[in-house]
Image 1 (cartoon, rainbow, N blue to C red):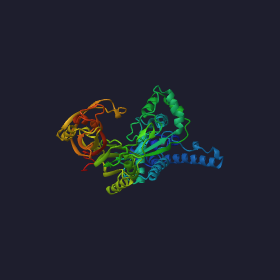
Image 2 (cartoon, helix red, strand yellow; image 1 turned 45 degrees about the vertical axis):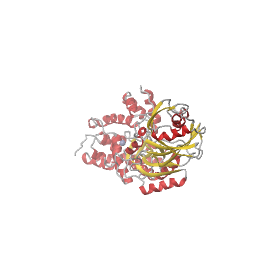
Image 3 (tube, rainbow, N blue to C red; image 1 turned 90 degrees about the horizontal axis):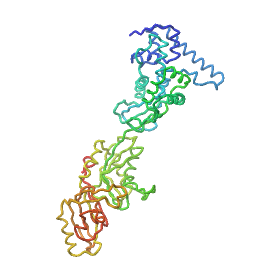
Length: 514
Ligand SMILES: [Zn+2]
């Protein structure tokens, strides 16, 4: 491989005074083999392939820089500022070895501090928009400086090279491979504060298209570019501004880029199970009215709290196959539920540990219990809500005659067992009208049977099997005629419901649970 450039030593010196060695070869459009070399090897490569004097020119520039720093350090300390440090006008320092080392070290430290468990990772990079400006300016400078040797076509993108150089460094430090489908995501935010203050505002004022905060298409919603301006907006602005103006804007920049933030995120992990509720004063979810909490606990918190802690997640979302009212118990095999864990530090917890978590849930209170707890796949999660309307639910209802019953009414009660698959119309109940739209729903009462009386035959117990979504309380007392026909119609008496228990929710969940 030969790369011969007809350039004198003065031009090489100017090149090394303006660009870092990697950007010098980048602007000559060298291949990846050279671009991936260390800076020292790049200089050696250029010297070997062109003129040995090149190395001397580079070292001379390096020496002059370190002399300047030493002079300032020995003189007045206040004058010591970044202007004496070399700033590559093209990559603003991010392709230089110290920056790459520092950045990968910060990634390793951040990951270690947050104690994530993972076996693969993927990285997302948010680089300062100033790099687009610098790139345009430096390509123009390269043409002036290198003449015919400069790039004909576009040079390799700084961001692309940065990614390729960072990957082996991060992989070596984390000791696990990178994978595009890894669930553990690292977002590296690099900023250039000086450019954000000096250049971006000028570009905003000169661009006909207004700058707004971009929504970001990032797969992990938590990980977003810090300045919120989209790449498309910056590219559009650059296309409208001349190179001379861009050069003028950037000329005062003296600081290199900075690692602004390393953000970590593990994609959600899902845990499924079934719960029973034995209390008539426990709501399923926190009960808050006008910003005030009505009851201290909820099923959701009893289940979600210990699971969240065990997976060391930032938070969780609770969902379930339907819900029962605060005063309704959930008996039998329980109700299927799902917990989505947000950003868990321990994403894969062995089943033995899951059983320990479940034990912990069950030891908190006698008001609820959990069973069948297990990690479930994202695909399985859809099954929890699938066909919810068609599912059958069965109940025990303790009811009473408001007035002492007549013999005919008791007989009608006994005949209920003959009713099968009766369709009823339910207008949205009065008690939920404030949160549900007004509608008439058709529901099916599959079976209904009398299970016993008290001594006075005023209280009686019914077993009902209905389509999911049936309002049982309203079916019993008719809700001022809004549910029709109702139990009131069937027995021709004023009846009311005292207590309700859900006996079964017929959904196979979590997978394999019987
Ligand atoms: Zn550079």
